[in-house]
Amino acid sequence: MRGRPPDWEDAYCEFFVARQRAFMRTAYTILGSWQSAEDAVQSTFSAMYVHWPRIQDGSRDAYARRVLVNNCMATFRSVRNETVTDEPPDRGVSHDATEQLDLARALQHLNARDRVVLTLRFLDDLSVHDVAAILDLPSGTVKSQTSRALKRLEALMTTATESKESR
Image (cartoon, rainbow, N blue to C red):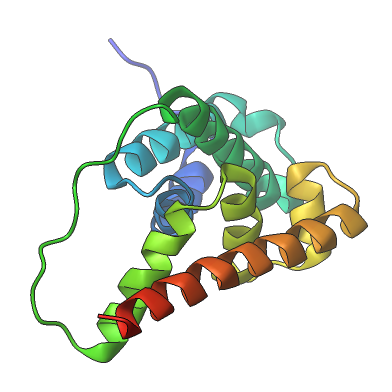
């Protein structure tokens, strides 16, 4: 027989409902796989449930993002030797969809740290300070990693554009 749920469970459920989609988007952008993203988010919310009573109200989002990024990095390390074979079908798409697809592919060619920094900074729209807190890095390091990751991404996108134009 199960007793009453803990007093804090409603707050946890509200947090889950409010953040689950955004965390899925973040994890997918980092990992490039919906299945892996679901696993990382599930692990994140499981850890959040266990530790919820000890996490301060104002730091729950930052704590959750840090756990999510750590789960994504662990997943990335465990599958980095796998070869991705699922390619989207080759069919006519609008110009905007092609650019988005190219960006998604280019992101997957970056290393995990670059993906994490770019995802947190630009997809999740976090400040340098917030990203630094999540990754436990100095703000200057986040700025330099963001700059280098953007240059790598730009190089990948330029290469992809040039190869399309030569067809």
